[in-house]
Image 1 (tube, one colour):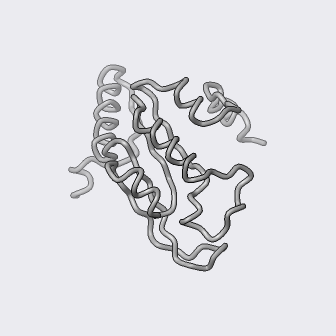
Image 2 (image 1 turned 60 degrees about the vertical axis):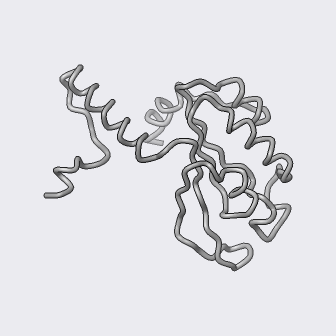
Length: 153
């Protein structure tokens, strides 16, 4: 309960929607938007077909991919390494997690994050923006990552 004020502050600008993802993405798409999508994983990448309250067919995944590919904003989508996801997002940057055994099928699975942007460039741009804000405000800004000089020391 002691963290409740921080949670409330964090959620002040959060908007929760109850609508199909395609509608929400279309409604809020802009160059300043980052969409993180974690849809139900395609059936060919997992052992069960009824793991989610709302499943997606391959056709649903294709529709979502079409909308995400046309988005003005940046997009990140996660899923298991699979034929369908690799086909739909083969032209995007790809970040792979270590291979792990899943609890449902007891077989090795690899989660992947596909991004419509280069994560390294986005991280560098964020650092530049933080430094610029620091110079403009004369305030100390927290940094998440050390600079190259600090990392070499």
